[in-house]
Image (cartoon, rainbow, N blue to C red):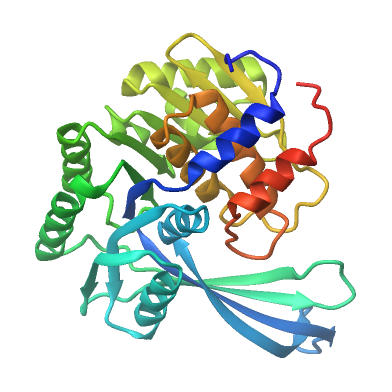
Length: 342
């Protein structure tokens, strides 16, 4: 499939099966996402806010734990590296990673640090889908202690030989820093494996990576201007490719889908696979980088990888919270896609 070809559903369906069986080392900032769900009964007399009667609470892996969760759900092996505190949220997060089949041997427990927790308050009622009404973040942003960094570096070195790819997920809470980035690059070069990154800005830290994923705002920041048109996106992508020495840049564009800019001169704008049933965009970017990394590690072309990631993102935005599509669900989404006008 060339970068400017029409979408080939049969080729993509064959490609889906290849997402299983790989092994990916995932380095990044680990969060526990907490959801408190209540039924909206009335407006408060104290403030213009709904009163929620508590219904349930649940927890899912967040931050860099979400790409690892996606990788595992698609039938591949994820080796998680990051930091949690020696606290209840940290214990819950590690337990849920283990339940998902993710290796937690590389997770460092720092008793001086709190586990980053993002609590979302969600209202149910007459709405078709629950509505998030507030989010409360408990975030630890101080730099990691040198001893913790040394443990992460050691874990990267020991996990490297088993990994078919290295994925960095940078949420700006200290795990992805100058030393760990350099170590991840060294590990990928020593073992000749793919290295990808999903970063919330500061893209220039990731020179030498194979694939860099960012959103429209982050791509605009690196070129110093807002991006509105396809041409704007393409110029920013080519500038980013040149600055970073990457093979490909993926720019996600929300309801407009995503754009792929590659060093072979190709630029592909992929419309969103699902625009009508978008209930919660949380974690969609994590799914994109997880699927692209898996697909490339399996030997698929970057174009096929981007299409698969686009379909996967279209699935997870239909669900509440960080969702993880399976191979069967991804195949279903492709099979039921109408004849595209791409």
